[in-house]
Amino acid sequence: MKKAKKNLKAAILIIGNEVLSGRTQDLNVSFISKWLNINCGISVDEVRIIPDNQKRIISNILDLSDKFNYVFTTGGIGPTHDDITSLSIAKAFKIKYEVNKEAYSILEKYYGLKNFNEARKKMAKMPKGCQLILNPSSAAPGFKIKNVFILPGVPSIIKSMIVNTKKYLVKGSTTYSKSFYLKTVESTIALELEKIQNKFLKKVDIGSYPFFKNGKVGVCIVASSVFIKEIKLCDKHITHMAHTKKISLQKN
Amino acid sequence: MKKAKKNLKAAILIIGNEVLSGRTQDLNVSFISKWLNINCGISVDEVRIIPDNQKRIISNILDLSDKFNYVFTTGGIGPTHDDITSLSIAKAFKIKYEVNKEAYSILEKYYGLKNFNEARKKMAKMPKGCQLILNPSSAAPGFKIKNVFILPGVPSIIKSMIVNTKKYLVKGSTTYSKSFYLKTVESTIALELEKIQNKFLKKVDIGSYPFFKNGKVGVCIVASSVFIKEIKLCDKHITHMAHTKKISLQKN
Image (cartoon, each protein chain N blue to C red):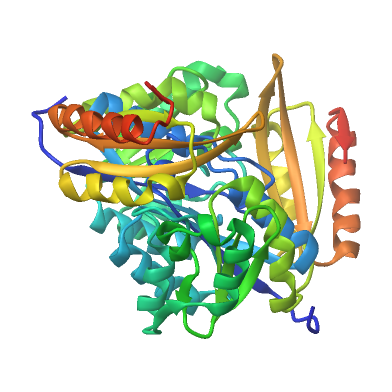
């Protein structure tokens, strides 16, 4: 990976009617977001889910690639008629949509000459000049064009190939986080928590999330920052607050 | 519900750093989308996930409420400092942010005078003139303002209160769908499937989704339409294709 740079932000564009309709539960946002933060110091700052529709793909790609350092798309690069992501990306950037020789050769080897039919050949068509993202799981590569990374929709395939995006990414600052589980309700600690947040303004981001599990009620506080020292200082304040209010506290 | 109207489209705006970071797996999109389609004939046509940031909430609310018939937001209406959705919505529409008397009274009854502290009182502050969405699970109401429905983030609470949005919604056309599970790979059926899609253009939407489960590979075809008769006709074509190609087929 190239030299570190601060505050790199990415967007994820999920392309798929099946996710919008609720038929398919998206699992890619959570995986890609964690992977980018831990491995590349890049934080996901917006996600959009849109239908398999050329106009919508084009307008969203242009908007997101302009606003964010990187864009990751998932879905719509298979062999069927509803797979229109690659063509739409080429149209968005006004780049020729053509057979990528390297991708063609990878697919031809994988399927064998006899089984390399027209539908499979479609998966070798990409915007001219793109760079491949190799797919060790089912051969059909994703690709990178400008600051956009085109990935398939199946979570297990994304998991196997995302490491191959790393060489194209510039490393940003890792966001560290620490979670505090308090046996209380949000309103009991809200005012003190706000004071702590104000002490660490712009240095630590403090989130508060109520949880209900196995009949127990609690609050999970998450402190996130690119400065690990500030999180440690913040930890002291949260621990002190819990102690003063006699609230049982677990950390991880 | 009011009289039926065709082609009603909604957007969902998920507000929450915890979803963007991957710490929390969103489960609300799938639930809200299915509920709206089955119960109200409204299809979700775009989803966005954004951080707890006032500027971003304002710009996204204005954009989505202009583009779609309805917008549903989740998250950010609790008692802590990071709960800024209600204030941001008021600012977006340039409406006064004030104590809603009905909400105040509900919360006061629920907590009792003694426990109705400042943090909890914050949950009664809403844009002036909004209509409440009652919450049978944890009292704190959501609200409707213009075409925007403000809901909390916790999935179990949304499930308990979404029925209370129904009276504010106009009923659209239900989208029906039928799924076909074929023991094959996408590229084997891609060309025939495209021909079937072209036959039913603008009447039936045909999606093709590969799956890998318990070592088995298959393709799930989903035919969706507001015309149930067209799905039945489409079913005949898909069944005939499977039969001709000697592919084992299951439907549901």
